[in-house]
Length: 290
Image (cartoon, rainbow, N blue to C red; front, side, top):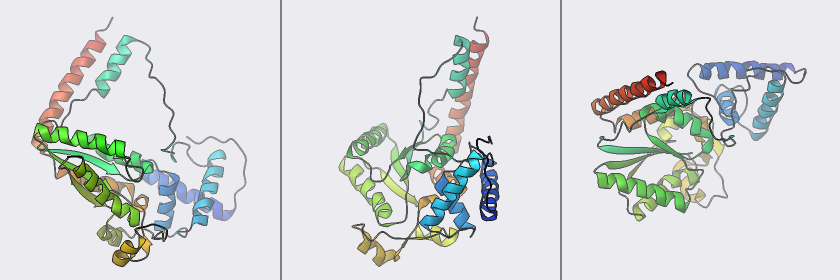
């Protein structure tokens, strides 16, 4: 939705940024993705439209802000995933809530799988991308927001332990930045979950050097103030890379491939058929509501 709130004259260079932003946004919206400002910025960098510098990121943010106010960029296309409004849901009739329940009704389609899987991502800003991949796969996900708190880690361990007692093998698929802390977070997750009694296996699927070599995301200097800097630079050099710089479609594909390795498709399809049958039963009740 493009709505003009102010009149503004843009320089030719800013007009070019706005046109390119609309092209990038349209490209991703066709696949059902919206973007954060940082993801949009990295798409500009990947296309060699702007340099990978903090001042360029700030300039793009300023132009995007002015363009939205001037009605030149869709308000729904750039999202802030860290600030969301929450309120109680409301309905106009019992029949309406039944229709809503039918659409949202779901059984655990992975209940009888050999493997229990969760997907964890380092950054909260990427939750929308992770949800886009995990929802159709029917796997849960967690935004770590850096190093996971002790409370959240303990609760996660209890989830994995309960699945292990049920007879499933537990796997955690992890995605994080390729920098001193981002690499270490994978180790930290594995160590602490094991300490709390879970035998879960942590699989880091991104960001890895082979992906960096393949997709060439723009580098950043590794933080010299990080306590893990010396170990990191000895193995990888002085450059680091952010997970946000990967194309969201690439991230979704990586998750899908990783989860599918732990999925017995025939079993899940049977559960999906049962789910659809039960949804239809709820819809029937809603249609007959008087």
